[in-house]
Amino acid sequence: MQLLIRKENVTLSQDELDYLRRKMEHLTHLARAMGDESSKLHVDVEQTRIKTTDHKMMLRATLSVPHRVMHAEASGMHFLEAADILEDKLRRQIEKYKERG
Image 1 (tube, rainbow, N blue to C red):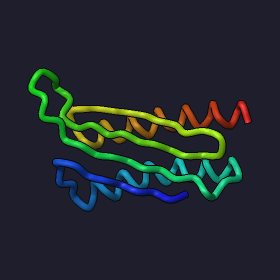
Image 2: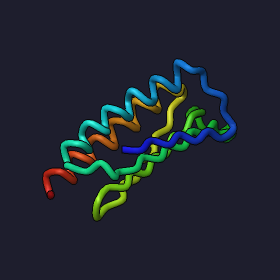
Image 3: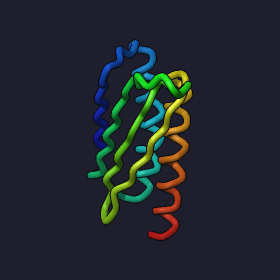
Image 4: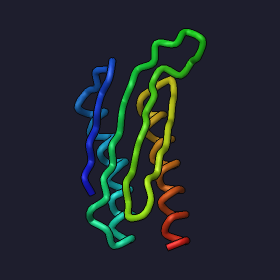
């Protein structure tokens, strides 16, 4: 699986990038179980500037697998919180995809 991380209006430390990569690599193991190496995962990381919400970090992911494109969004006060939520949402979608397979 190919992983592409795009940052917008945010600076991430190397530790934060490594954390996100580890979380998304867990999803690659699930994708390999589907028997597909051509899957692509795009993750957009953005710091929101909306003052009416407590959620400052927004992560959006698009996972392309055979015959399906999965989308997930997660937001949180901190980057690590949003990354955990995003991984959980994508994992549930992948598991549902595998069950239908």
